[in-house]
Length: 383
Ligand SMILES: Cc1cc2nc3c(=O)[nH]c(=O)nc-3n(C[C@H](O)[C@H](O)[C@H](O)COP(=O)(O)OP(=O)(O)OC[C@H]3O[C@@H](n4cnc5c(N)ncnc54)[C@H](O)[C@@H]3O)c2cc1C
Image (cartoon, rainbow, N blue to C red):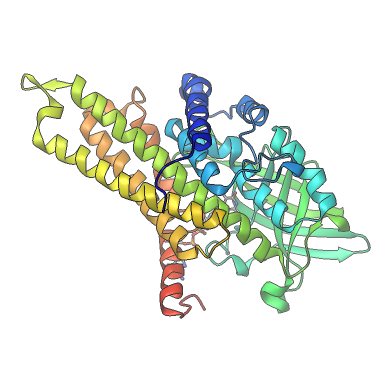
């Protein structure tokens, strides 16, 4: 058991924190107010090797393990988890899917530009009638000659309107259930492909869209992996996304705690800093104690995943705990900051708006509890 970060991990952590403070913090408010995506961030992250951290070097990644990746995602999310999601979420979800499931030719085509920050690849799995139950998707892909003809709708797709390509989870034969599911790459300029941006409660500088496919015709070779493997391949990416979400939630919770400590020393009432009141200290100490424990659970799950060891229940636990903590920390931080916390003069309001999103994407708390339950009881409550 080793509870110390290596020198290399500390350097990656420091670099990511510096990037967040220097490149994200000065402009995040402006982008959020204008509800605009900061397109430069992805490019800069690409130049600094922050995209595809866990992708092998032969495909343009940095070749680090998931622990290193989690440390970077945590530090970037200290400033803004949702801006981190927009800038590099595709290098977690789509890149993992492609690295795991695509042919060598497809990897060479898609991964190096993605890791350089030159292209964005979204993943469209969720639909109006298929959210947690991903196997129930109805977007139809029909092979006509040497083309796939795609019809259907996808909901809540991160970077949906700015992506160059979307990996679309499709059903090729409903009677086959999950064995008919395929993942197909659709380029943004394909006729019949349209996007409708949605405003979420948080993610103000982000890009989340509903996508429609009307007789979209794409080459047969855009199939990623095989028919019947689409769901499985997508779930590999979603597994990495869960670690990204858990690590990001830690970053948000740490920022809320730090902001509380600073504010509680600066703000005086009744002639004393509010940090000298025991109830304020209780809030701060309790958050700090939880953060210490949850951080190790997230790092433990990352370590198991890095070593390719079974990690489903450990990662589900990390995602539930970290997400709950980010929600709690941001809510309590607003209370500690009083009305000031409800303004955008402090980072806690941003984290409050974003934290709830971490409870939904990458699988809801209920679905993760079912995963833990299945592992412990060897009984599947979903089927
Ligand atoms: C910020 C954000 C970004 C997203 N990005 C993407 C993306 O890039 N690509 C993509 O495909 N999707 C994306 N999503 C969609 C996300 O994956 C889904 O929202 C999520 O899987 C849950 O599906 P749903 O919203 O349809 O909820 P539902 O599945 O309808 O669930 C509603 C409620 O019912 C509960 N529930 C459902 N089934 C059960 C059960 N068996 N037992 C107990 N409770 C149950 C759920 O836990 C939840 O509380 C994103 C969502 C958000 C919020």
